[in-house]
Structure formats: structure tokens, C-alpha cells
Image 1: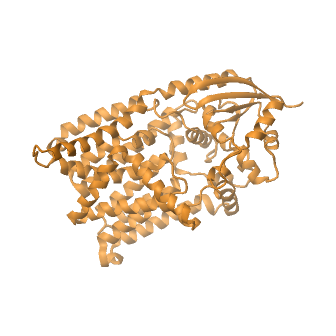
Image 2: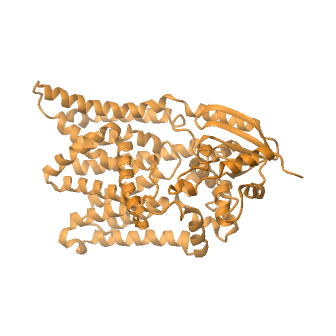
Image 3: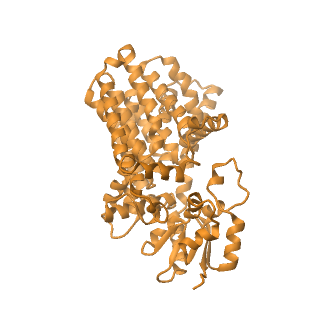
Length: 507
């Protein structure tokens, strides 16, 4: 296996097969996501105004001076450049961009795994990453995660290869880490890992290492870039909007100082490893003592990076969801690859234990690959188009719309408000009722899909963050029964049942 994986022809063949598979399924999986619509809207706005602010951002925050400065700049600028090739807001150019970021992530991962485990481990780990469900999800999705992860691992690659020399390599690593944080604050998890790399490689002489000082300067420049873009121009707006939009739902566990939140963070971080590796989780766990016994600098570094990323995710990521598995997937697949390469080199003994180990190892790999393949069987793009067409059929010229952000993609020429304004409006005006919030925006059509319907409830646990991210079902149903009539219903979509209500406002 090691010889085969080291073969250039085999590597190129598998890379070509995976590239073709990703290209053919780019729109098929996953279904268009609300955040993709949001970012597409923002990139479209950036093209026309030069500000990282789009139609779906409008309705509440735009009453504050400098409202656009709160949003991420780098990903918006890059997506706007991709979207400039299109005549209208579209997902395809942005998903192609995400796939390109994914390709750069695979390259950074290969270089890291090559340095820490050798060519066979690098080939195995990179192939497993490219075929993982976490990669299919993130590299096909026009969200922040794949860009932030690519920047974080690129910084790690520079640090690992040039940890003992090279001021400018350290400067580049720090700057990349800063850009990752600007792209998504969850990228803070890379900073402890990077610090560990320099500490372990530098030892007692770490403070005499020019790369460390370069890294510190690069990180400082990244912080200055963030402050200059987002905080210093309108500090009051930055503080107010972060308190308004995120204070109740986006506090990192370590900042909360609540034992229950910290424990939940550790279980959440473990769940990210499960999403990242699927059934291969058991192989990664079995590989840890294998790496520990080697006592080489490379094995120690691989373990330290994994530990730092795991702890960082547990303590720093405020809301752990499957989107963030890509942050941990590359590093965790290094020990998985170590186990497989070591296992494949063991001589066959013909005993029952040999059969059992082979069933376990290759069964775990097959199970993980199956988890990646099964979602690709469903054409989510076709399901989305059916839902979009049903919503479009209910729209009349000049309608003001409110609903799930995904349907803005087919109705971008209408005034379209995100339904999440119904949650945010009472945060700014605490005495406002749901009916008053709706009356403020006066939508002619209200579109409710499954994910939105899940957050329309009167029985969400008050201790859950979703209690701050929901609207009252009783209030909504009372409003709809009095002022609205359902004009569209389509079921069996990637978003569950999609309903459209026409609201009859008094003249």
C-alpha cells in the first residue's frame, strides 16, 4: 500500500477522480444554505457599493452609522470578484471559489502530513480528507469555513516547515492566521496550535527565534487589519451591533465561565471529530498511542497540534455545528493515515486476530466513504429549484417579501427581508410584539420553510441558545389567522414543507 500510494501515477489518477466527482456534485450537495444566500447578497452589494453589506442585511442594522463595517471583508471581496463574472446573483461562481479554497486546503494538508509523517501518510491523509463528508460539505458551500480553515492550515504549514528560522516565514504565518480570524472568529482555535509549534520546535531558545518574532508581528498586523476595518472607524456601532446580534448566542464557553457550557464544549468538540472522520474515529483514537510510542519530534508535533485544536474548539467555539468539522478534519486524519499506513505494512500471519483487525480497519474506511457517498445520491439542486419555483409563482409584481434567505436567490429583484429580523427587532425594541415587528416591515408575502418552522415555538428550553433565536408560534398563528391566507404549499423539498402566506394589510 505504501509503495502504491507513493506512486505518482496512482496519486494523479485518484486526484483526477476526486476532482471530477467534486465538480459533478458541486451544486448537487449540499442544498443551498441560508448563509450562502446571505453571503451572495453581501457580495452582490459589495460589487455595487464597495461595502460588505447586501440586501439581506438591510432592515435593522442600517440605521447605525458605519453599519457595513461589522461584516467580514476578505471573504466578501473575494466572493464579489467571483460574482463579477455573473450577470445576476448566483451560487455557481461562489461554490467554484469555495472548491478552489478546498484545493488549497488539500495542498496545505499534504505538505503538513508529508513533513510530519512522510509521503505515504501525506497521500493517505489527503485522499481521506478529499473524500470525507466534512470536505464535500465545506468545499461545496459558499460559507466562511473552508476559506478560514485553508488560511489556518497554510499558517500551520509555514510554521512547521520554518519554525526555527525565517523571520518572513513567521510574518506570513501570523498574517495568514490574522486573515483566518477576520474570515471567521472560530479561527482563533489555530492560535494555540501555532504557538505550540513554535514553542516545541524552539525549546528554551524560542524567544531568540526570528520566526517567532516574525509571527508575532504578522499576528499584530492581522489584528491591526481587523481593528482598522471593523472596530476603529465606528467603535460604538461595532459594540452595539455585536451586543445586539451576538451577545446572547455567541459567547465562547471559556468566556462564559459556566462549567456546564465548558463541558458541553468538550462533548461538542468530540462530535466534530466524529463528523470529520465518521467511522474512522476509532482508527484515529487507536493511532494516538502509536504516535506517542514513537517519541519523534514529528509525532510529538502532530499530537500537539491535534490536542491544541481539540481544546481550542471546545473552549472557543460558541456554537458547535457540523459546519465546523472541517476545522479539525485535516489534522485528525493524520493519525488515521498513520494507523492505516502502519497497519498495511504489518506482515500477514493468517490468524483470527489478523482477520478481525483487517475487518475493523478497512470496514471503518469503507463506512466513512459510504457516509460521504450517500448524500451525493440526492439531487438537492433539483429540490431547491422546485421550492423556488413554487415560491416565485406566488409572488406578484412589486411585492415586498420576508422569509428564508435561500429564496432571495430567485427573487433578488424584489425587496426581500430576512425572517430573522423578527427575532432581532425585539432586541432593539424590547416592548415590540411580533405583530408590530411584522407591521414595521409590511411584507406582502411571508415564506416559511422547515428550518424556520423549527424555530417557531413556545416551548424551547429557556437554557438553550435557541430560546434567544425563536419567535412565538402562538403570536404568529394569531397574526396569520387574522391577516393572511396561505397561497402556496410545497412538500418534499430539501427544506421540508415550504409555505407562502399573503398578508392583507389595511389601506
